[in-house]
Length: 99
Image (tube, rainbow, N blue to C red; front, side, top):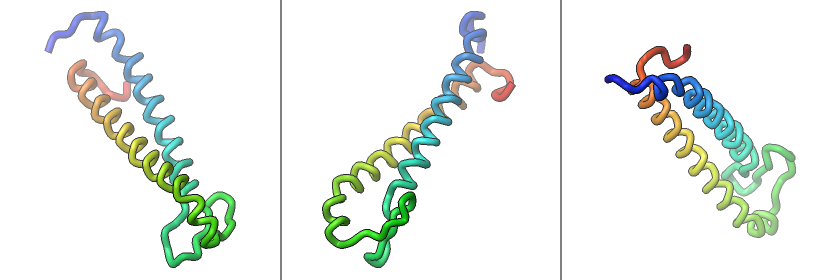
């Protein structure tokens, strides 16, 4: 496939931008996952603080847990879309993906 020179010359910038976005989303996803409470037998411990949660604190934090789960789904979806876009753009523009 023949693409204009300005498009082919802009691919390294686009590639770098997409890779930076993937890295930032991955770091955010790691933080969000670490902030979530484990779902177990009722004696959960927060991964970051190490504090055991009581029944009262678990029910008060229900909104927080729902937001963290949504953030996990959204961030992982964004990463998947960016990786697919990166691969498609590499196929269209040709050449080495990493070079």
